[in-house]
Every structure is written in structure tokens, then in C-alpha cells.
Image 1: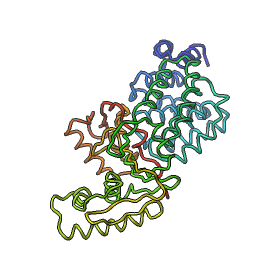
Image 2: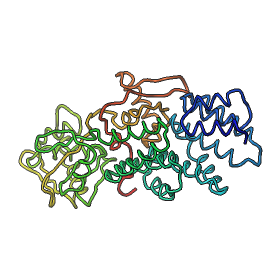
Image 3: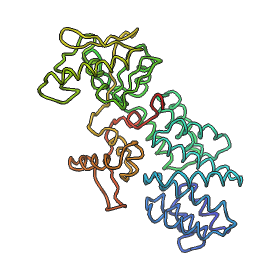
Image 4: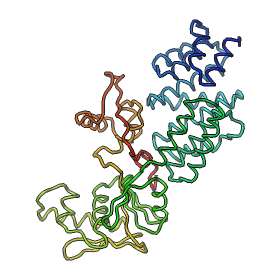
Length: 406
């Protein structure tokens, strides 16, 4: 490798993008194309960066397997940043395997962190933790160690392990400052601020107040019966009941929790669960059926009893009933939570991350666009969706995760 390529690579590693471009801007050999592609990606020109990396991968000879694998990893990172989630998986796994076989452990570790970030976005936390556990951060460079610790913090936040997340962010800050890369330091600072931002609303005894993620963890570990409206779960430690696929039952459970320790009138329950203004005998019969289903779903942690005017929730062994709700409740809250990260998303990537059909996501995006909440950029396959970040929005709680029984 010649001196200009070496100097450009060192400049990129130190965060000096323009300095790297000055050294390789007029060169079209494979190594220079790869470095230019990485530099353009750091400058935000992702389309140009992807094209340069593909040219570089073709320009490397058939025996330069490691160089082509590095290009594949860089291209996968661009796909991840641009939220082209379908282009991340297989190519990244193959490149990671090649790098590990050929002894390039640093770039292999970076590929693992990218794979974990991809799995986090699509809610596959168990797989993300498994891959992350195979990385030993001791031998990583400061920049890669900071990225690794940021990834650890991301997994811990999704698991609601705030103590682990804070420790990981502290280590990430130390590593980022050792690396002296301003963008990396800024990313760690942003993640630290996000951890301290309001993550949910605590609703109990008529009181409604904002709480941070650490307080959410405390509530879930307490002896309270918790109605988690962020993920449609019902907790009574250590038991967890998922009603994510049974929205009517969850609506009824939340309504009963709001009235606890009293009861909720039948008319109110029918209006909220079935969205009707006038109830007839068929609605009352359906309410009895749904209450029977709710009683069966909660039999291990609570009892649903009929009263003269309606129904009441009786918790087994819980001192109180608490509702955890998003700080801002919107019709398409999970979709807004994804868009709130400031990146531009394709509708197909949103559908993959939400485990929803493309048609459902497109309809929701059209509704948000009509309301001025989301904005489309581009046309056809190049169309991307984004929205300004919502202050305090509970992304960590709203993004999809593994449900009990999955």
C-alpha cells in the first residue's frame, strides 16, 4: 500500500474526511475508490458512497478477498444508515465470516456491531445479544471500542437494563475521547442524553407524570400490576402477559386499570373497546365474551369481576395497579418512534422493522403525511420518509421486541 493510501486511511480513522479526500480524490485505483466511498459516506452523500464502494469491490483482484469483504461491510453500513434493511443481512454475514477466516478481527468485530444494530431495528434482541457476546472489546481500537459499547448500551436499553446501559455509555465516552473523533463523541453524548429523556408516563390514582427509563425499570421490578401501554404487555413480576396481538383485550385491561380499585361502567367499556356511540344488546353480549377472554388471559396475575354497573380488576398480590403510557400518544406511535430517529426510511424497511404488511405501513404513512407529521422525499423506489425528532419520544419502548412465547 503506498504512502498516500496509508495517509488517507489514517485521516479517515481520525475523522479528518476532507484530509483523506485531498489525498485520493483524483485516483481511481481500487484502494482509493474504497477510501473515497467511505469518505463520501461520512459526508452524507450515501448514493455516491455506495457507487464508489461497488466500483472498488469490482476493481480489487480475485485474490483480494479481504479487501472486497471490507467493501461489503462498508456498503452494509451505508444500507443500515439509509434504512435499506433488506440489503444488510446476507451480504454482511458473508463478509463477516470472510474477515474472521482471514484474520481481520478488527473489521470482523465492526461487522458484528453492524449486525447487532440491524437486529435491534427489527426487534430480534436474542440474536443481537448472541452475536454481541462473541466480541471481545479488549483488543479493539478506541473507535471500535466506542462503537461496541454504544451497541451494548442499545441492547441494554431495549432490555430495560439501565444500569448496564449507563456503564456502557460511560465506557463509550472514554473510548470515543481516546479516539478523538468528534462525530463519535457527539454520538455518545446524544445517546447519553436520550437515556435521560422522558420515556413514559406513569398513570396511577388519577396522577399522570413523566418518568425516565430508569424509573420504568423500577416500576416493572416492583410488586405492582403494570399495564404497559407502550408495548401492550401486562406485568406482575415475574409474570408477563402479552396482549400485543389482542388489542380489544388490552383496551379493556387498560380501562379497568384506570378505574382501579373501583369499577368501570359497561357503557364506557363498550365505547372504548368497540368504538361505538350507542350500545345495544349485541355489544353487551360481546363485552361479556371479551371479558371472559380477558379473565382467562390474566388468570395467573389478576381477576376480572362483574359488578352492578360494570367490571373491576382485582390484582393478585399487587399493592397497586400502574399504567405505563407513551409521553405522546399517537394513532401510529410505533411508526413515529422509528421515524423519530432522524433517518430517512423506505416504506419496505418500516414494514420489516414493525413486522407489518407493506400496505398497512403505506396507508399509515399517507395518513401521517396528510397530517403534516411525516414527509416523503423522492419518488418510486427512491422514496424515503422522515419526520423531525419528537422531544422525549419513547423510541426504546415502542420499537418492536420479542414477545413472550416467541
